[in-house]
Length: 293
Image 1 (cartoon, one colour):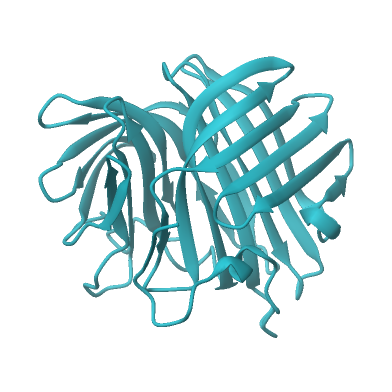
Image 2 (image 1 turned 60 degrees about the vertical axis):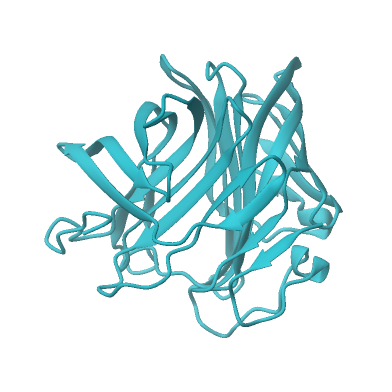
């Protein structure tokens, strides 16, 4: 398994498991699982975030089509996960099984609104961030959604550490193009330039993409278009369907998290689908948040 680790800490298969929490109230450990069908007509994501210092977990599962949201299970008062990252929530049961570290994972959800049974198989390798303990894995995704067979692609990630959703804005984007290229990039409003996490994975080879940039046009508060700057692969991203979440802090601050299934098109005409998020904490406009500027 190819591991491209940009961080200074070791990154190994044991990192797929839960980590010892820090003592901070907002210490968080999360697992994301995105998916989009081959034709871009169906997509969704699952996120499990555990907050030991806050005594709860966040569980999100969303399903969308280009016509808009289709189903969602959003729980901000879920119990902390048990063995197998299982979550026995109110009205739903979810399991996140890391079957083979860095190679294969399985996500299952049973609820009255949405049922998922999806397997994630790693494609090209694992990418570790330099900024924070976190890694991203491009995947082929197969299984069933509401009992119907599904085949598509996506990305899963795992991160741990303090995450203050109410003080920092960011852009995160991940997609697969029809020619088999996977791409990923992330920028945060840190007020300084760093080597932003980004990769391109083509023909089974994942490599860090130096000099990643991003800039977004907004229609009100909603993102309308983003241009991602990868070396030799400038890509325009347009939202197809939003699956947003509103986040309230322990002290009552509110942040908006407009996440969307998107269409991607490169300058040379290649197309694909994936997910992008544009996180909006309180005062994000006053901070002149425009990724890439």
